[in-house]
Amino acid sequence: MMPKSIRARMTLAFAGSIALLLLLACAGLIAYARHVAERNADVLLQAAARKVRADLNGEDRSVPLAQLMADERQDLLPDRLALLIVDGQGRVLLQSQGTVPHWPRREEGWRTATVPDGAVTIVIGLPWRQTEAELRRQALTLLALCLFVVVIASVGAWLLVGRTLSPIGRLSRQARAASADHLRLHLDAPSQDAEIVELVSTLNGLLVRLSETAAAKGRFHAAASHELRTPLQALSGHLDLALRQPRAAEAYRAVIAEAYAQTRRLIALAGDLLLLDQLDTAPPLPKEPVDLAGVCERILCAFTPLIESRGLQVDGSGLPAEAVIQAPPTHAEILVRNLIENAVKYACPGGCVRVQIARVSPALRLKIFNECAPLPDWNPEKLFEPFYRPDASRTSKTGGAGLGLAICKAIAGLNGWTLTLQQESAGVSCTVLFSPS
Image (cartoon, rainbow, N blue to C red; front, side, top):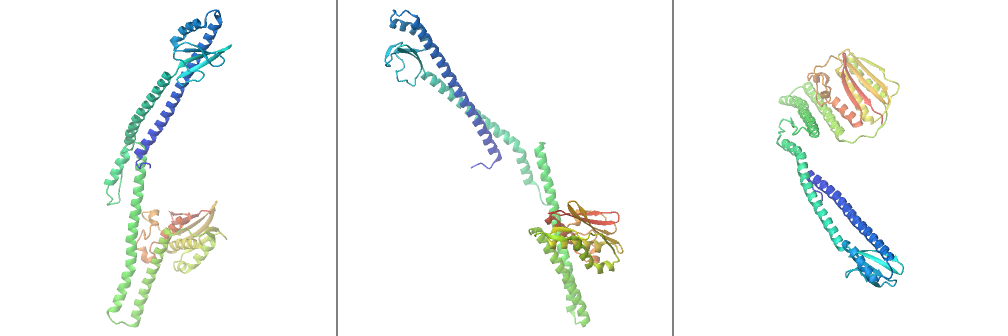
């Protein structure tokens, strides 16, 4: 099981890599040393065998073989070589010393070379046990050296990785000690390493976004409480006033009408809140071909009484005969209705409202403009927050709760559309870019 600590895993990986490389190097060195030793021994044996053969063939055959063996023994003694002369049946005729390889069985303690010489075979043997022992000692020495290097390298890697990761530990302690009371956390880079500085910068950016999100949620809860409390208080006040003393039928009717209006307002507000929650949590709906131009014309017709009552001039010349997009029909309907409703409600009396659809290859762009006075402290991001209104006094005039743009933003985000607001010299324009599916 791998350890959970990055420091331990990196140290183990480094130590394992070093150990593997050293073992491969040791195996190569040991194999090479054995190869060199065997090659040198074979060269020595072959050279000695050829020399003995030449000496034997160059001497007078009248000289006894034993005398020749004694002479060769003196030549072979410095190199610790043993000489055997074997007949055709494998019998040892002469040997240079008492300790020689057993023939024809070759022992592991000897390395031999043979040279045929007529009816006999010349066998030269080199003692090999000492060389084998030396090779084993060299191998053990190399392995011990490798182990020592691995231990030293592991300790060095442990210290180096610990030093490298120490800024992360300091950053963690700094985060634990930071206070989240005011949702304004800021981390300081514990080192000037580029990676640590980038990490701290990214974390601070995330903390700022979380702080802004938390602040927006706080404003949403406060505004939702206020928006719900206002009609409830009005409803409760009217009912309480009606119940305090008997009244005429007309007075009761007025109270009931006002209570009905406040109830409708609560129902609409609850519906918008439920829709906003569904858009944040529900999966995307299946898309179908929707005629965007037809939707705009239908909704403009639905708002004709309000348009006429405010004396607005509606310019729909920018609507083509047909503009088909792939979208959930209900989402397209809600988005266009809310945007046109906002434009109609917040346009200055007698002002202009323009609705245009244009092809921006490969997407369609819907642009809705309403003529109005410049808004102070223009902040498009805040305009998309639920219940946010730059002028709270406009609520009583328009009857809105400040959820329309928030719902539009949620619909656009859910379907991959781009929704932007822009303040122009004569008013405000809202643009929706419907990306192709």
